[in-house]
Image: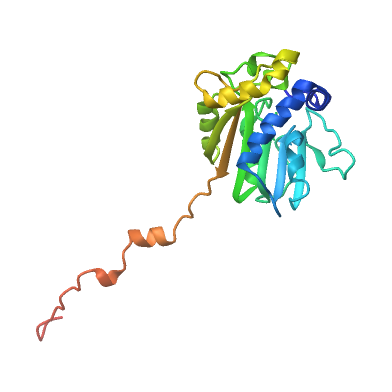
Length: 250
C-alpha cells in the first residue's frame, strides 16, 4: 500500500526528522554516485528528496510517482519534472535511463515483480539502479510514524535474491540511518554520533535503511562465436585417405 504524497512531503520537507533522513540518505547516495553529467536520471516512488543534486548537471531528470500515491509538482520554483504514472507502465523509452533511484516504490507496491520488470526495461546498457528500502532488522521498519514503517521490509539477502531473479547484479550493499526514528531534541542532537557509531559497528547497530546498487545484466546473444567454438572448423580434422577403384568395377 502506497503512502499519500502529502504525507511523504510533510515528512521529508516539513519535519526535523524527515530533513535529517533526507540528508543522511543523500550523503550515502552521493558517495556512490557523485555526479551524473550528461546522463538521464530517473526517480520512482518518492525519490525527489534525492534528485536535487543532479538537476544542474544531468541531461534530464524525471521523477515518476505512482498513481496510488499521487503526485506533487517538483522542484519548487523551477520547471516541473514530476509525472504521475501507472506503477507498472512507465512513460519512459526502453533503455533510456543511466541512473535509476527507487525509494518508497518497491516495498509499498502490491506488484513488486512488475515494478522490477519496468526498472529493468528502462535502464540502459551500463546503467545503474539504487534501491532504497526499509531494513527488516532495523528500528525504522517497526515505527509507523515514518514512511519506512509501511510496506514490506527486506533483509539484504531477500532484496539481493529478488533483484537477481529479475536480471540485476548487486554491486554495492550498505545500510544507513542508524539514529533512532524519533524527533525528540536529544536524539536530534546526537544523530551524527549514532550515524558514525553505526557505520563503525554495523554488527551491533542495525541501520534502518538498505541501499543496494545494482547493474542490468544483459544475456549473452545466442549463436555467434560461442556456437562456432562448439563446432571447430573442419580444416583441423584429419584428412581422409583417398580410395581407388579397380578397373572394371562400378
